[in-house]
Length: 477
View 1 (cartoon, rainbow, N blue to C red):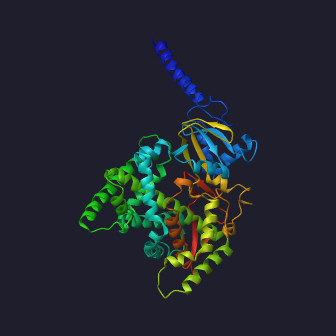
View 2: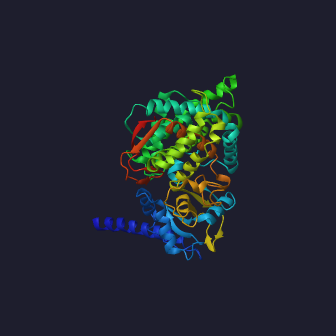
């Protein structure tokens, strides 16, 4: 009897493995697929993909395979298997252009199941029309003429941040502080929330969610994924309460549409469940502060490494201050004068794209570079691999803000904000807060890295300095 039970148990495992292998192979049975490796069933090459990022070279997973499988630099496409899905990886300007210009025609945005389980409705809306409407609302709120009124608010938050978090410190760790800065701005801009204690409590839950979004989706106590789900429920409850309160304020005339993005959405998005709107706001808050904090962190890093770049940024900001009255804050016209500072930030985003790449899903069969891409396959495009391509950027490892002078890089070679219909609608918002951060930073401080030769970048899932970037700071004379 025991032998029979053991036989049945082993047989069921073997049959399951055979079915899994058959399903895995069926994904790659189409003719004329791109060249590449499929890896192990279910797992594919996910561990190699994640390992390259955690070792600080996310582009290496791609460039190694491009060299191995592409017959020419123009046919930079290969197949793999990532996060349980057959995937075609496209690189370079031609690949970026193809995906960006075929959004909602041949491909749509795709997120791993872990994202959708943490945020049931924020990352994937119920319809294409709803997604388009949300992006249109964001674009209206975040266009330059609408953002003018936030210059003073962001400048005030920056001054308070540096006064309370940086001043009177000899040494500090940059990354947690830039996250605190950009989160404070996001709370103020999106929710009109300015209470430091309330912002701090909300930020704690956001950080737990941010860490768990792209984790392995195992919902067991103590895992990143489990903690992220619990934190997202608390966030949804808190933000839903804010949504209900704002609805009442709008009805009674105590709030205006122009006050923040929540009011703007409530007045224009139509009848939406409070929980669904809360998920969308949470998704925007994550997107609105995580990526910008990464750019601010690496701005500090590269200004420490290149004193001549720091001096030019400092001089540009001093020239702006020289034209202002004492204690006069920044204005939109001042932001427009920060051309070199923005070139520096752009070069930071070239070397360290805050979003290394994203996924799309094929909604129809199509061909790319002569290869067949089946419906349902995922496609991955990589900003990092494109930005580090010497065909587009000579000596790509070299930090050189001059690359962005004049007309700048060629189309589709510089893509930190994506492109096409899904280009990040918050790019002007990000430019504003990054430049305000740089202005308030250099006018107050000089600094040096505690570990001058420590340049490890860990991509998990977004790029961060290996040790958080500890620095020694000195008051600006």
